Each structure stands twice: as C-alpha cells, then as structure tokens.
Length: 390
Image 1: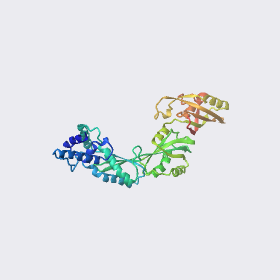
Image 2: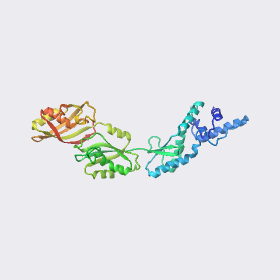
Image 3: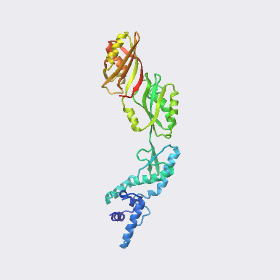
Image 4: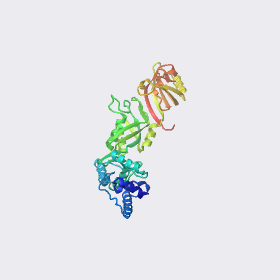
C-alpha cells in the first residue's frame, strides 16, 4: 500500500527523502528521512526488478526546497537571538511560518493522493530545530507552557520570540491620601507606578498593574491590603528577587506591599475576578448635629440591610447606569463630637460607601442621610481590610 502510493507520488512530484517519508509520517514512529529513504529503496528495487527506471532523490525538492538542510543554521539563529538579549528562561518551544505557496503545494499533494497520514512540514521543522536547540541550549522543549516560543520563518531565515509573561501576586497598602491607584492626569505618581517601577527595572519588561477593585484617590487602603497582580510582558529577566523588590517599594513610605509571590495566568484571573467583602471606616459629618441615639439608629438600620444603589453620579462616565443590590453585613458606630461620628462597616464588594452616607440625592437607599433625615457626608474614608472569606 505505502510502496504503491509512493510510486504514484514520485511519478508526478520530485520529492526529497524527508518529504516522501513525511507523506506517511503519522503511520508510525521514527525519522521521516529514514522512512523516506527506506520507502525509495524498496520501491526502486521493485522497479529495477521490473526493468523500470528508479526514482533518484532530486537535487532540489519540489515541496520543501531543501529547507531541512538549514535546520542547524536556523537553530543557531534562535540561539543567537536569546544570547544577544541575555534572555532568562527554563524551557522553550519552536513554531514556524512557511510561505503560502509551500503550504498550498503541500495541501494539494495531500488531497490529490489522499495522504491521510501525512505530517505537516512545519510540524517536522519545529521538531527538528527543537532537537538541535535542546542540545545547544541545554534546556527542554515544553509543549504545554514554555517560557519562550521561537517563531521561525525558515525561508526568510528570521526568528521572532514570544516570551511568556510573568505574573506576581501581592497585596498593597496605600498609606497616604491623594494618590490614585492607576496613573491619572494631575498626579505625579500612583500606586501602580510606585509598584511597577522596580519590577520593570528588575525584569527589563513592560509592567502592567491589575488591582482587585480600587479605592478613591482620597481613600487609604490599610489593614491586610488590597490584592493585586503585576503582569510583566516580555520579561528578559525571570529570576528576580521579590523580597528586594518589596523593600524598594516599601521605601516610598506611601505604598507598602505584602506577600509577593509568583502565580500562573489562571491564578491571576481568579484573583481579579473574585468579589470580596470589605471592611471600611468612615468619618461622617452631619452639619445639623448628631447624637449618640442617632448614631445607634444608623447602626441598627444598616446592620444586615440590603442596599439598592444606582450608579453614583460621580462615576457615571465610567460605569453603566444601573441599580446594584448590595448588603451591609455588620455596622458599628461611635460618636466623635456634636457633628461627627465614626462608622465602621463590613459590606459586599462593589458598594460605594460615600454614597451610602450621602444618599446621592436618593440614588442610594437606605443611606445615612435618609435614616437621619439630615444631610450627611463622608469626610474621610479608609478601607481597613479586604475579606477573602465569602
């Protein structure tokens, strides 16, 4: 069957031994070159026995154009690419792009002769270049999660690198007011810029900050800190000292990071999509005055309350205008003076606390203003803790 099919192919196409072997490459294990050479040998013996002309391997293959003679050179191009960058990585994979005319020629050959066990040319190229790279790099191929992928254009003799991003988990405390979480016009720095600067310096990559939620510019983030993920795209250096990076960030005196550790992309997505309860402390101002009895009334009404909150007017440009239903799980209050009281709350994530106090002209109900029948607003607000337990 194989010999007969090979004879049909070689009557019409001048293929090298490797391409001939690859036409049957998925039938078994082994090297396509050896397979093709063996098929040609057996076929020629049969043809000679019948007094027919044998099929010699052509000087140039009609299909691959002898590209496999360049595999060592292509592997060296890959090696030079990472050496020049001084790229740190533990594993790799090879991919390739072949010209359309080569791919079309191969597809036409497969369809014409019904070669259902043919192996694609780029698959063999990837494997052969990978074998050589494993030897010269002394690093393994990793098909599922490589640190770097070499994208080889064998006919143009070019190499492109696809470098796996780094993901680092941590929690941050914002110790001062007046700093946005991410860069904002009018502010020289942000939580993101303070955290990303040492990461960019250490990895020589592009650092992107992802926070699990955010607090306002004038709100501190205290306690156990807000979860965040630093994503580093195209890191040149992967072996970085997270303790030293934390020390550098913490020297700012404005932002402090805790528990830095490497995580996977899947873990990063889980961190950023989880919705956590939060503990807040607000200093509430009531211009008409406030008594202990009224503080107690606020606490009793809010404890366990379901809050219907229409998107606050101050964020309408960034958020869809809809009503969100959130719960206050716990409330405590303490009178400070005749016009101020302290309100401590544990709420569902996504509840806007400033509007819970002010009422936002009736867009949040119930609110402190609604409960008191007096105008109230939040003078200061701190996030005390992000609670992981749901």
